[in-house]
Image (cartoon, rainbow, N blue to C red):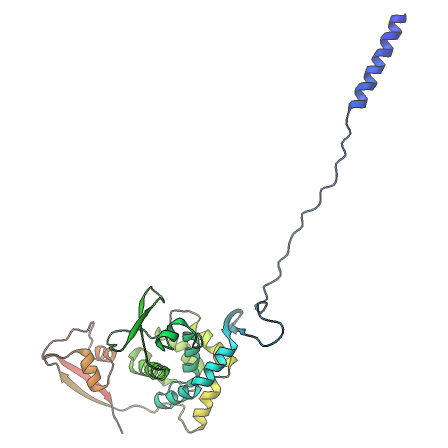
Length: 285
């Protein structure tokens, strides 16, 4: 009997001992994941909040969500420097001063671009066939491309006018009103002046933000016709002689090489002695 009681007591003590060693684990509630919400980027967040702005972002029409950045002080200085020159070119060739200025700002980085600083080339005009002036190399669409070089910016502005007015692919532009900068902007892209698809919108943004069309209005108000009068041409022929080149003939008759090739259905610059070339030259008053 005593052994049975002792066995029961020992059994109870063992059960109590095992129960006391069991650990009780309480689980803490897991925090819910925090989802970060991004606020739309403020296009002007990099601009100084106080004081004069060095840069400004202009919306590209017709997409207000895209912007183009330009240095304000440099651009205004550029306009003040070259506005009169652009108006002079407008009177001489009929290219809107606003277009000339906007292209100059865009292509030259408001006159501060590397290419412009070393070549005075304000319009990104490359050497092309027939260019016998100075040149320099610069990385653009491809590495080490040849660009025209000028002794003074005014020669770049004049060459820009000649470049547009003497090439047949730009001829349709001169049928637009001379103060219709929007048609000119889109027409330049259509004719292949620039590879940037947003080129017209960038030109228009500059013109409207800096009121560049006011320079067109000044020229028109001064008595300049907004619509070009029909041109009259003398049509004749030239017989190729030994030593003649298309470039030499173009200089002789003040006609572009591209126009000569177009008039005579030439695929390249090869001509032969005795060949008859058609020449079309604008009549002078």
